[in-house]
Image (cartoon, rainbow, N blue to C red; front, side, top):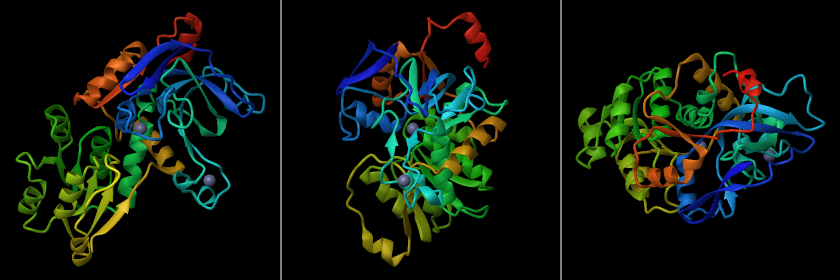
Length: 352
Ligand SMILES: [Zn+2]
Ligand SMILES: [Zn+2]
């Protein structure tokens, strides 16, 4: 099969490799769409210790069951079934796994980081991680379940309600989903900061009010809210600059949700956290419940990226990682393996 292999910083090549053989409790998935995640860009640049070459990236996918290991009940996962996958593989037995917080499992593994990912014709995953798609859900949307689930988890953690004033910094895929999920939670007063004009236009189309065009995010939010600030602030970037701007823009007694992972360490005015009783919350990934909610909401059209989604052949993947690093304004890039080996019947039978 073809796989897009990360071989060195900024070097990815298409290689012909053996397709993975699914273990007894695994399934093999024929990948239809594999999304490029913002969290992978630092890996592409060689700046992420979790991603060491050689590695096949990719953890956001839609595809079809190709085959299943001997312990997998065929009745639930027949070949040809359209599916998506929760890419966080966890132990299932620790204190976090048994209380619905699998994202905190100390033994968690992530597809495309600690396991081979889906930037390939096929990927093998545990059968327990597979979610068959509701009839209304297109494979293309299913490939965006993972970033949507991240946004749902962040908004849930924020304790956000209809009266909340919200600020989202960064309108990449996560930021755009955050704005949509906030709308689902009844939050009408939503501010957004984003430097890329194409992404800012998409955020504006979702009803968000742009701030920080002059570089002063907090100043604009304070001016727009009568000096109050935002009740909930989401930093979907994670640089020192955005973290400090988010803190300055957060109302006293409000909450700052740290979502973006750009910088490991940031100097931060902790005394103003104390004096204004701002709650700082790290939010990482999603629980399985968030993942199910995301798939439901994408299928029913409550949320979904429509503008700015780019579909490209897997062969062009390396060029698209480079373009995204350089600041391309796509809302999501979906890589498509071409599957020349698939019979026409298999393609048709796979349906969507
Ligand atoms: Zn992702
Ligand atoms: Zn666990």
